[in-house]
Image (cartoon, rainbow, N blue to C red; front, side, top):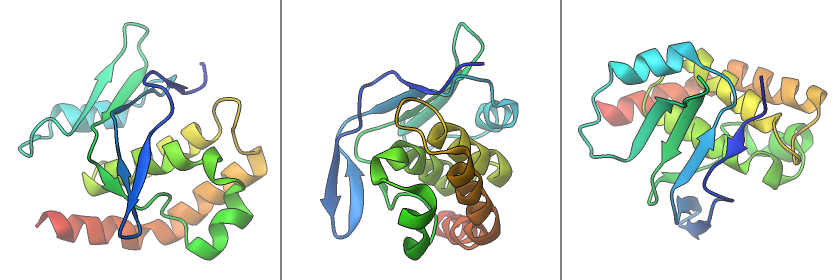
Length: 155
């Protein structure tokens, strides 16, 4: 297995009303296959237009594309815990964007949290194993509220 790798270059983000707005497409090869995520995507309709895609690379890894214009709030970790648990913001900006997309789309929650952990622990600006574990654990404990709220937005 390899680390998650950006295929689009660093994300360009604008701040609008306290939210992050993606200024250009974000494409990331997760570096391994997330079976549940790919299976979920295969059976999910994208009626809102091509705002996202989840596919498999020729190497068998999962690729996630988040389209420009996606508005997100970053990691679903309480603000007080973000700097303590995850460290510098650049360590989890990409992980937070992909994770927020997956929560908004109501992708399987466990798989979504695993993607956040995997991306945060990948690359040269990865978080430490301890911080990565605590970030993941916080999402597992407290992320249900954000996941549930996003589900109500879709109804």
